[in-house]
Length: 164
Image (cartoon, rainbow, N blue to C red; front, top):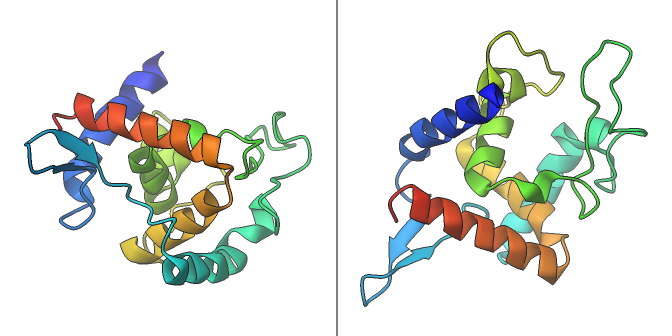
């Protein structure tokens, strides 16, 4: 439960950190909030860039086909979580865009805090924010439509919670 509160606090801080142009919420003409995904999974050029970046930075742990490490639900020899799949069989899509962005940018340990150890390093010093979003756009583009819809609903709920 403590980790959930830490993650929620980190997400609130992150809402401001992601910057203009990557807003999770925008206003429709009638003033009603609508979500704007942080990951442009329907932009072919961005997805192609994301696939190339994924192959360079992510595939060695998360698999060339987004399959994750074998027995990913178990702990590795070092006691840390193994790399989960990023396809529809994993839990990536169970997290809103904002949290996924933060995990990639800062690393899991930084997001969870309190001495948590993870092999998932932050890539904020290696990739730009746009490159991180491109990687996540590629990953999201591979999900079945019903998973994308569920994920978009989660993003909409978070946007409302953050004041959208």
